[in-house]
Amino acid sequence: MQSSEYSLSHFLSPTTLAGALIYGLVFFFIALALATVVRVLARRTEKRLTDVTALRFATALTQVLIYGAAFVVYAHLIPELRALGTALLAGVSVVSLVLGLAAQSTLGNVISGLSIILYRSLFVGDNVQITTPKGLATATIESLSLGYTLLRDSDGAEVIVPNSVMASNVVVRIGRRESRT
Picture 1 (cartoon, helix red, strand yellow):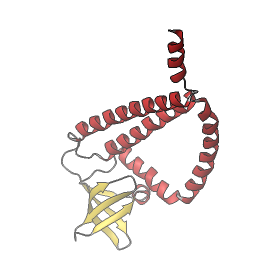
Picture 2 (cartoon, rainbow, N blue to C red):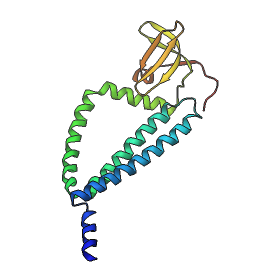
Picture 3 (cartoon, one colour):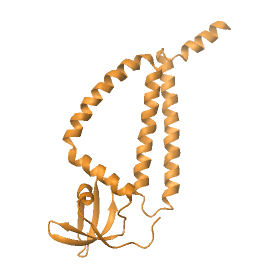
Picture 4 (tube, helix red, strand yellow):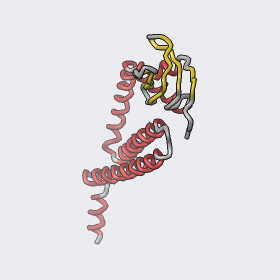
């Protein structure tokens, strides 16, 4: 009996390849189940909202965090991955610095988009006036995303405005949509 207990504990040990694979599958399926629950809850909530931009962003971010947390816990459990994790952390910090410098404009739009969505200063359906390269434009907000705000002017033309511009310029709301949730 003792030899079968030894072989089972050896098989489930995170120091063996079989144990590491089993733990990896367990962590993956736990993360998959949690991410599925988040998606289902978000879909149910979307039905009651008129503007789902913030919910969709929060859902995607939560799913990424779930998988990231599962991987970090898994990496700390497997001794061979601890050293790899330290090396990856150092490499990621250098890569993030380079990408941050290269993507300043894009990151500025995303941060401004977060600001617009979280502070709820603008809503889909609002009528606004904004200065464009053609001059003062009156338009209706058709969509808000993390990077850009899509407007439709009175001539039916689409005006795509980077969120960094929307957040840093004066936008005059001249009409509000009727219902807000």
